[in-house]
Length: 206
Image 1 (cartoon, rainbow, N blue to C red):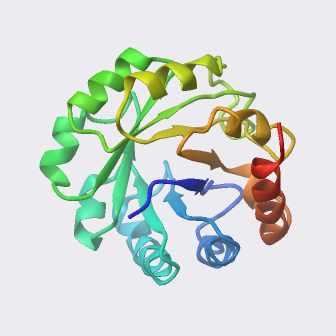
Image 2: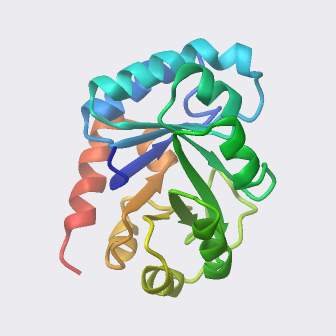
Image 3: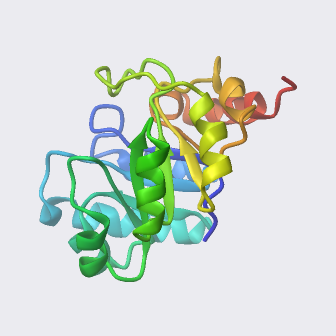
């Protein structure tokens, strides 16, 4: 499974559970290569069928399916991976529950934390927010120099996240992270058109 390219993350308001599968299908058809299902409210039982559908969709489109947190559910449905943050469990705890899949870790602005995560067996690390994020308004803003330092220090894939939009994605792509995560920039408005514009902006000359 590739950990490269545009990485779309669902959102409880922009992609509610009654429409998220259809919205994800549109995003995958438009070229999203990694999809993360993020729902901080409902139980594993309540979202299991949705995650099963999303995993199947990702497989059909040769994309990678990540579930935010929820290692027990990820193991149960054979998801491709999970993502954990600072308030979730440790990598070691997650790996005991979810022994075979991808584990991604949020490292915010800390290359030291990313190195620790790499040494503990993380498969990728995410840095951000790089801009004000409409879906995480209280996130701290991280310097883009973190991406350069991380690329020098790490051997695992790097993801940039946080407030990335069609107007600033070229600033991030100039630093060549393996993945660029987007939420509202994909799911607010016309999903297909958003992805076309984001993809073009990523490739625009600097």
